[in-house]
Length: 94
Image (cartoon, rainbow, N blue to C red):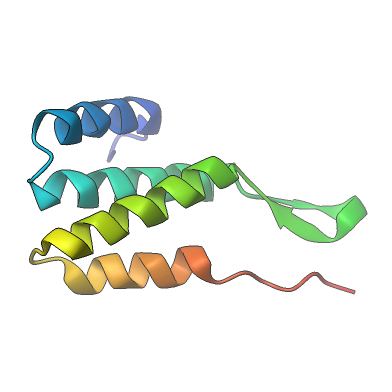
């Protein structure tokens, strides 16, 4: 993720959670990678005066953070902060 290879990070962490579904850290890392990729995809679209982005990544990041929280781990605050960022929806500019 640090090098910006977010597609590869998502692929790796997806494989990690498939192989170790009880390991919370895989879900946290996958959620983080998806959140970063979603953030990178966001753009302000002038005709509708709203922000657009890859909503599938946003939804998947939320699911992975929630899964992490259901298992538990040392990054609970970071996961909750991620959920707050991803569920907050800015109003359209009028």
